[in-house]
Length: 189
Image (cartoon, rainbow, N blue to C red; front, side, top):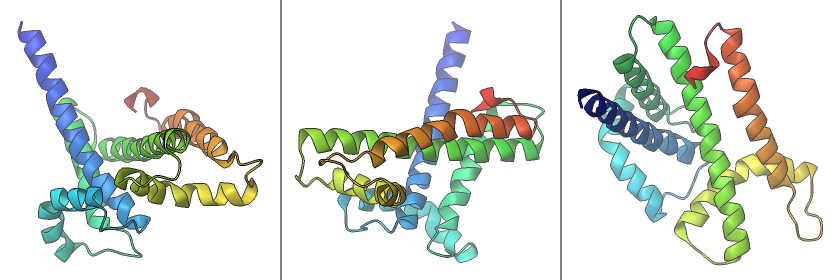
């Protein structure tokens, strides 16, 4: 019974840290892609993250359109989550694993955003939805270089498939390979 309670506690704490990290990382991405901050979903994320970011911005201002305070909070949340459940790891290891986990999460965000965009384009093309508009704004900077290389053929946009392949290769092969190169276990992702 204690093991079940400990497992449930671990799960809940992990989920809370992952949700908080996700919120701050999405806030970082939204500012990086210059998403519409009048979108109701964006406003919700801003309201959720502002109490932490507003005081931090006095110390860590944005640079080049990037919300460095949001990125720092996301990294710190990942580091704290790792430190809570890991003992004996050096701070450098924790920092590297946190950075790799954040990069993996960014790749997952873009992967699933593309999946939703593709589904919406099949189910309800041309309709407006705040979530679809936001996902379009997030994924457009990723898709633009692929669209320049591979123009639509017969109304089909193959650039999305190429973007999927690139995301999968980076997430499933490049990141674990980089972890191995720095001497860490790819199973940590």
